[in-house]
Figure 1: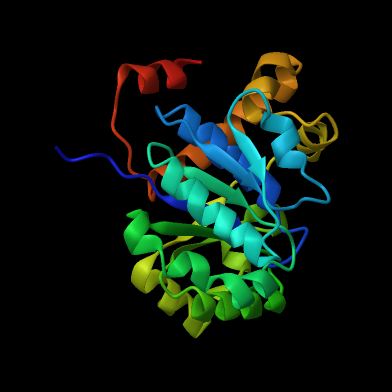
Figure 2 (figure 1 turned 60 degrees about the vertical axis):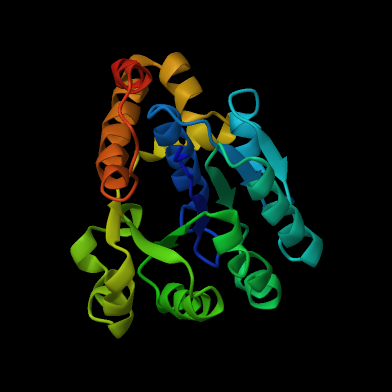
Amino acid sequence: MDTETFPLYLVSGGKGGVGKSLITLALIDYLQRHSQTPMLVETDTSNPDVMKAIQGQTECIAFDLDRADGWISLVNLCDEHQDKPVVVNTAARSNHGVARYGSTLGDTLDELERELVVFWVINRQRDSLELLREFTTQLPQAIVHVVRNTYFGEADRFSLYRESNLRKIIEAKGQSLDFPDLADRVSDDLRSQRLSVQKAAASMPVGHRAELLRWRKGYDTMFCHVISHKSSSREALGHAQ
């Protein structure tokens, strides 16, 4: 009998301040509402905001991917929990650990029977692309989707990426995606109160909630282009909430 396999999702960008945490929260929310039970691996051990936001809603664990032991633990986790997608929220400057130890993961993907799907978050600065170019050489097995965070401007303002040869390389395997902006007062509450999207949708004032649900609809559209899932009654229920 064929068994369903689940990807390992890596949310990265190689630097801080590009929106990785918000995209990780959105990805966890999307998977949960589409009949999946993700596990979160938090690697920002000095500031584990995502893990604190979703604790109690999904399984979480912290690994330090600047050390060989963290990569060994990540591989073992993927092997021990083959029935779940694993979502890794990476810390800033993650390319250092990838360069030194990433092959521990890359060389075991076939045995794990998992795809490595990367959501690489960029702003409009050149270093986002330079770090991405490094990453693609360090983990060539990955399917990389570049996520333009439109908090930094509409998609047509990401001219450095749009006009680069790197975009052609990315789009040979992955896609270029646009992550919707979220009003500052709502994103600030998510961060300061360490709320998951699910908790925020249940507790925020009506105006905040309307903005949150508009944002959720936008990232649902983004993720549905690159994440396959089986429809079910749970999925239908999730969309109704």
